[in-house]
Length: 278
Image 1 (tube, rainbow, N blue to C red):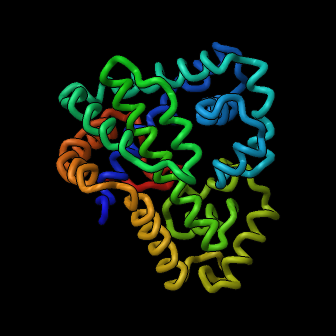
Image 2 (cartoon, helix red, strand yellow; image 1 turned 60 degrees about the vertical axis):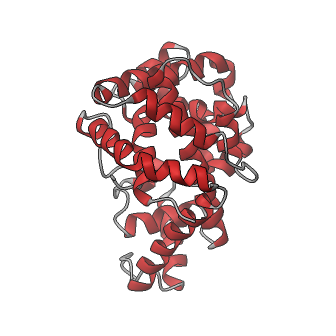
Image 3 (cartoon, rainbow, N blue to C red; image 1 turned 90 degrees about the horizontal axis):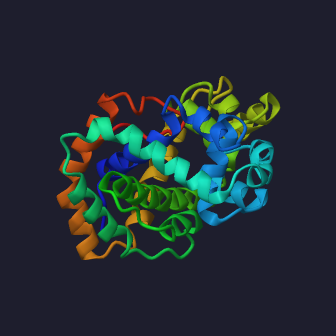
């Protein structure tokens, strides 16, 4: 059983608008948070409640622990969880609306909701937390909520595959840079020091996944492709026949909606998320 990569890519695009909206920093600061990254960390982890830094570090995986600790737990005393979640939903709604003018948003939201409500969340903590949030009333927000649950679902599976492959957060990001999946500024954006980055590349070199110049090798490229394939397989493992059929039916209109969102300027590629455009 499989779910097409284009389905996951489209889900990612629609979810990701909350990270690239030009007024993201200002909106989170308006409710009391400080800076873009505090807004990012707090808004993405608020589905869990008001978690400790260690919980967020474990679930986010790719971010340097010091970057998470700069935001958490201070964020929980600076803004209410309800305000953080409401601001994130408003960001999503406003960023998506221009690109979805020609999409059947009601249908997409309904079908994607039917998919995520049928899944098994065992071992998928961040997705389960998002699935536990109230389902929004309006179609655009409901579509974004559905893609968020599914995006974090695949993300939880991806973290499991990365850790099973022996890749910690710094090495996983370094390999993604070497493979051209994310910008060269990924080290700074994810909070890793130059020393940690050099150590990550040394560990990749010892596995023959990169060479002494931090250039990816054929073995490294094959390993990175296998990680994506394994993530797809694990992510699809709890999709029953009905859910899988829904993804097949939705693939065309969902990809079209995601491309329209990209064309509206709401998401740019390449970006630090590392998922390619559908």
